[in-house]
Length: 443
Image (cartoon, rainbow, N blue to C red; front, side, top):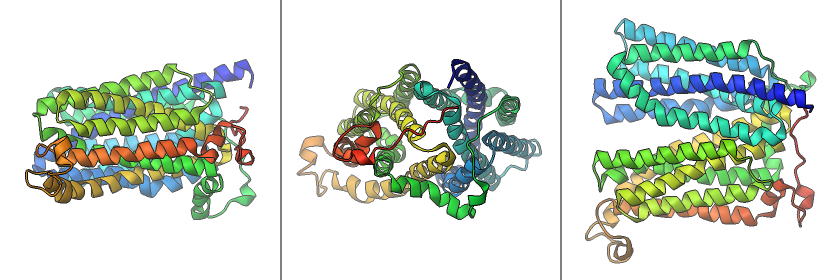
């Protein structure tokens, strides 16, 4: 890859990234505004929480198909169609607001459509990075992707809160629709290299969708990485489900905002580090160590009922998450053939997103029906575990978070000691025959 080609590839990536940054921020504005509207008009925590189902379900359903389409057709066109779909969904929402016909069930449909088009976009976006960015810059490119997500998550709700008081939900959705159109314009006049596809070997969509997971299964190191990723995501899902109710057990909403702001600051700083740090040549140790540190942070979150301790631990936890995600993505993008990248990354994304609903469904009942009663004043664990971590004030949820935090630590230690996973770094050892050749293309 010549210097001119490298500069051209990075310039094209910068254009795509800028458009997607605006689109992601716009989508977060709308997501926040719809959540506020839904709760204000229904006063139902159940109906509000049910909206999460329509956020997480589409990626689980659509992602395998999205991976096939990303490998079979033009990735640039797939990204354009996805952003146009988002713009049309925003237009539908604008019409519903303008005509005063918006109902809670319409919010679910619109949320579902936004999530579908987002799921269709991601495999093509991630696979395009592999084709555009030189290998020595691929870590920085993925860091920028994490940074864009962090900016949207950190500042999106703050901006949306101000805009709701001024231009209301209708104005916010107009901004979101325009951000989709900007993303489309950024894609029209560029070229993204496409890996060669043998059309004579095309199979049914279902069989082609299975090829991504089959490739991971056939590569022991990648399968180990996927399992590690799944365990780490389950732990994060438990915090997503239990973090807010746990903190509110011992502090006010003001204390909760401090803790969540600390988590957002950690996420932002970790993303910035991912952008400017090229990363080590040996990536697997960083993945396993940062994953274990996420688990350790979760243990510290659950260990004490203190806003200060939880804020510090949440900062650390969310600092390590984008670094772990960035380095992991680099491994996938440099160890998977370009013609399979869309399907493989869809399989990874499918596993990751599937773990979140699982964690949400399991965490609540465990906390409410066993751990919380067990660590009340006369609970079954009050005389044993309660002697060390205390009773009442959310101690049951704290214990559950501490137990879940052990899983990424154990998975990190196991992963670090697993030769097949370490072989992804090209180490010469007992399983050197399993070393996966570098699949990063010469664009």
